Image (cartoon, rainbow, N blue to C red):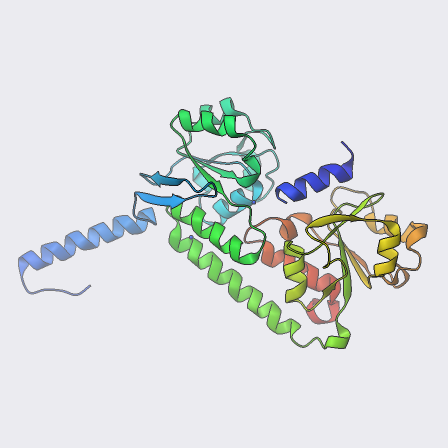
Length: 325
């Protein structure tokens, strides 16, 4: 498979919480209540809990999971952010963050290894919409007595918040999930406030290239990149397109972005030089003004807490005078 095809497949897949009484009896009741409250705090969530997952199925988790397999990087990043490090016993081949996940057993990529997952004896499997075409394998996991929760593919910030809340609830980390969402919202608000100083006439015309030459795929509407660009007052020249689309050389020249952001730098050697030396792009403003930038792929693609980091990276690349501090 060509590099760009692999990248687009990955993007599409990834394109992944008291008063006292005078009586002895009342004191005993208070003590019991306090003890129960402490036990609930340790668990982080009262069990059993019932949720409706992305398939519409109601799933009841009887006890706090002690062994979890995550089948996609976005779910994994959320799980680690929730403090579930010790509970993660399996993760996908694509998982690379945080660093600790490299020591976790791998269960496969887009096609997961059912036998491997069962051998890890998880209490819970965090699956994803992208696994939905693996119905037989998922059913095998369920038949083995493993709880499988299908997480919906998030396409905007609000859906990411819902995903974090869902994973927090089924893992006993609802409070932690709520705090993560609050922190993200506050961080996004700070970025938005900073971007408010950008005048209408100073908004940059931006293109986000997610694949690289020879066939350039760019981020259009209903992608995290679009929401990030809107937040930082940048105009996406491909906003009239839906999702990730390939643009011809002529279309790119016609749209004439002032800034080009490349999200695949870790996979391709010197992507900026490739763009700069491509003869067909010599008249593109971003090339003429050497306004091409590489940002890390995962924080701008994965539906988790690092979307804040991704937005900050985009902002620094596009408006270095405002966000470069």
